[in-house]
Each structure stands twice: as structure tokens, then as C-alpha cells.
Amino acid sequence: FTMSTEDLLAFSETMAIDEEAPRQRSASEWLEQEEGQLLEVKGSAFADYNAWLHAQRPTKKPPLNEIAGDSLLKAVTGFLNAEGGSIVLGALEIERYGRSPQFQGLPIIGSYLVPGLQVELGDRGWNWDRYERALRDLMAARIDRNPNQFVHFYGDGIESRPVCVLTVREPHRSPTSGHWFYHRPKGERHSHFWVREGNRTIEKDGNEIVEY
Image (cartoon, rainbow, N blue to C red; front, side, top):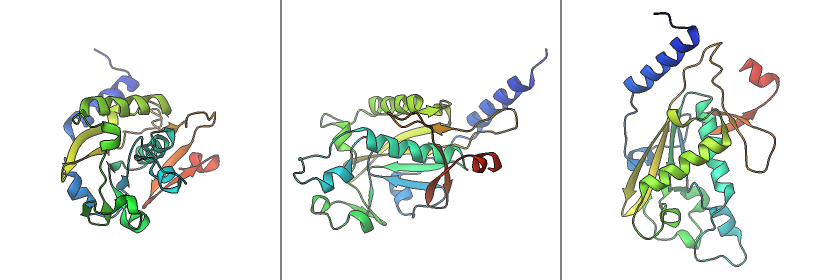
């Protein structure tokens, strides 16, 4: 029996994923840490808190739109192109959002407020399966090279508020596998090559990608 180099690489990658299941920390454990090379914290995958806070006549709940989704995809792509990492959804930085009247009285963990994900999960119970499918469909549609095999999802709760954690595993890379990932925002023709560097996700292009 003969296995090609590409088949061997794919087999090795699959074995690594199966053998190295990510350690499942609670969302609270993650939120005790500051954002950095391996951690990003976001308020939502689908609710646009920034538009809501700056609206002249804000609605009762933040609007659901594509902006929040592209912000999440940027972070996922950055981790895929670096060392991997984890993203907590459902929390906001106190430094940035703590003075907003809409967020008074929320649970606080570490440096974060926890509004949770109730806006996008709905009021009829936490359907994590449906939410995960929505996230995975979004990633498959807007990240070139479907990243879903490298992303582990689990739902959690903080003081009866739903939050979730996405753990992004660094893919196996080799000169022949070409496992780089590109984010394609909705409505744009240009794809973005994001990389996580410290507590920032930055874009590289041209020679920077070649040298990277």
C-alpha cells in the first residue's frame, strides 16, 4: 500500500486534531485573563453593539448585521494564520464600554462586562446547536479554506447569561500544504490576510505575506 505525500500530510493533520483535543476552560476562566496572543474577547457574533451605542435613537436591543460577523471572522482568521487561540463571545471590555448606561448592572469578570448572547440566541431557551451551525456556516462562507475542522465550539453561562468560547487550533503547515486562510468580508472582492500579533489582529499583504 502506497500513500502519497499529500495523503500522508492530510492523515497526519487529522490524527493531530483527534489526539490533541483542546482543554475546555470555562468562559469565566478565560475572562480572568487579559486579551493577548492567544485570547480575544468579543461582545457578539451577530449583534452590532457599536452601532447601537452611537445611534441617536437606539432601539431596545442592538441590531443584528454583518459588521459584527466580519469582526469575528477577522479574529478567527488571525488565529488560524498564527498560533491558534480562543475567542470568548458575550463579553465587553469595561474600559471601553463600562460608562454606557445600557450596560450598567451587568456581571463583571476580570476586565469585562458580560451582557451575554441573549440578543442573538433569542428568549426561548439557548439553542446552542443552531447557534453553532450559524457560526460554522458563516466561517465556511467567508473564510477561504473552510476552517471548521480547526475550530472547537462550546456554550457556557455566566450568571444565567449565555456566552460561548471558540477555540481555534493552529493548522499543520508545510511547503506543500499551503494552509493559509483569507477573510472575505461580505460585499468585498478583496480578501484579507490577518495575523494575530500580541493583543492585535493585523493585516499583511504583498511581500509581507511571502516573508511571513
